[in-house]
Length: 279
Image 1 (cartoon, rainbow, N blue to C red):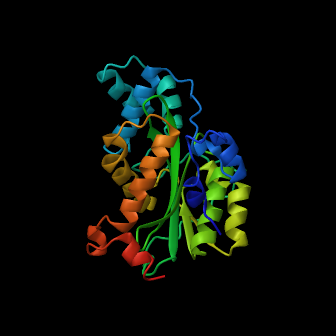
Image 2 (image 1 turned 90 degrees about the horizontal axis):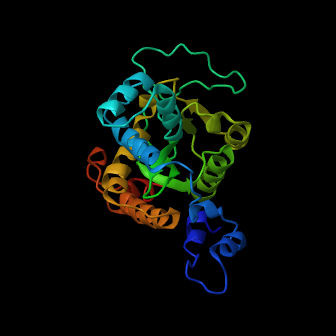
């Protein structure tokens, strides 16, 4: 079966006979990977969101009050209400020093964290998934990825204009079709991952469900490190104009990440060597 990434490679942006929209429809692709829908945010808000995205890797424990103070020192005229809205857009998840006592939304069941003390020693034993904010020259998109924790291999990734449960579920389904079924699947407690459509896909495939504790982003430290690597080695070094240029840049980077980038934690092997040859 042809994966979505392979189908994307069939798109011809300069085709005179068929528009990108028509090509995406014929290939059953979400055209958000190629079209950027303007966010409606001002340039100042986009600058603030990029600053927040960069700052997260230094102070992930900052809440809205401290971030407001920080942004004021950077010359932005902001208040707490505005900062909270920007934090939500960039998917800022504050890491709390103490257990977070806020009552969770009871409409979605939160599964326990299964990785504490677990020895991860084989491929497809544990996959992890998360979503991160990606700034562009005139807007932003969201990136999601699924990583095999043993090999650090990126088994699937995708871009979208919004963080929907349907989008995350589609990425999960494509990863399963291409690479098989993991024993455990770990995410945070985001509404996309606690949704019925996402959870039912995991249950239908007999996958054990693991979720980070509330305010415990470090429970999913491997994918947090992935986001830092992707952004410092690719996103912050490039100025992507739109969704298509962003997708092409990330496609090239993830090929490099899986097949060429040597990882110290893997004894200077590549994820491809650890995952593909061990599968």
